[in-house]
Image (cartoon, rainbow, N blue to C red; front, side):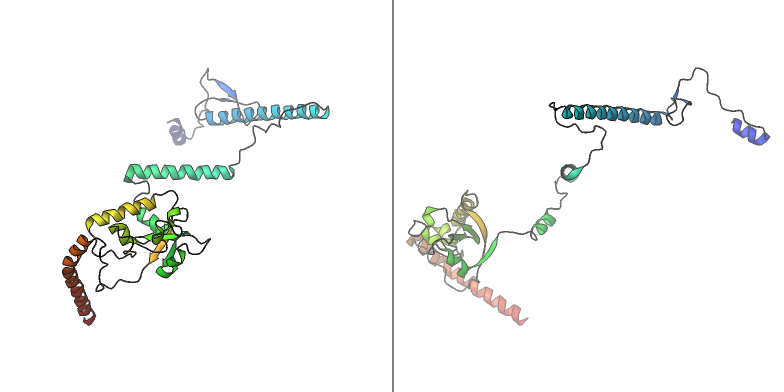
Length: 282
C-alpha cells in the first residue's frame, strides 16, 4: 500500500529494488540488460530460446547445403537434397482431407455418446438427402421390361420380383431355352410365391397364403444377396382391378380352397367399390 500513502502525502515513491540473490538472465529484447526469470518473464524467455534454436538449425542447414554444392561441383556423389528444417509446413490438400476425416469421426463418436446415434438422430434427413444424389436405378414400365427378355442378342436380360428389377444376364438358366427363361422380361412374383411357374407370370399377389408369402420373401433375399445379379430399378404397374378374377392355382387341391374363399374376397371387393362410390358422392 506504499503507492497509496505516497499519493496521499505527495512524496516520491521509493524505486523498486530486486531482492538480493535474485537470479537474472539476459533480456532477449534489449542488449546489455538483465531481467529476472520470474513466471511473468518466462514466456518471453522461452520464445527467445526457441528462436535461437531455430536460427541454429537454419544456419547448420545452410552450411550443409554449401558443402553439398561444393561436392556436386567436384563431381562427387551426394544424397537427396535436404529440406530446410525451419521452413513452415504447409497443410496441403491431404492435410485438409485428414482434418475433415478426423472431424467427421469425432462428430460421429460424439453423437453416439450423447444421443446413441452416429448421425445425431438425423437418419430421416440423410435418406431425404440421398434421394437428390445421382443413381443408376431406373423406372421400368411393364412393356419396357418385356423388351429385356433375352430375345434380342446383346441386350441385357432382366426380371422383376415384387417390383424390384434385376439384371440376370450372367445366369445361364435365364437365357433363351433356359430352364428359367419364362421369368425373363416380367415380374412373376406370384409364380415365385406359389410355384406355378407356367401360369402365374404376374405380379398379382391377391389371395396368396402366409406360407406362399414366405416363399416369395425367400426368393427376394436370393436375388438381393446374389453376387452376380444386380438390382437396377423398379417396375411401375398399372392398377389391378379388384373385381378381376384371381389367377387359379396350378394344384387342384389348392385351387379348390381358393374357389371356396373367393366369395368372401368378392364381397370385400364389392364393398370396397361401394365405399368408393360413397366417397365420390360426398
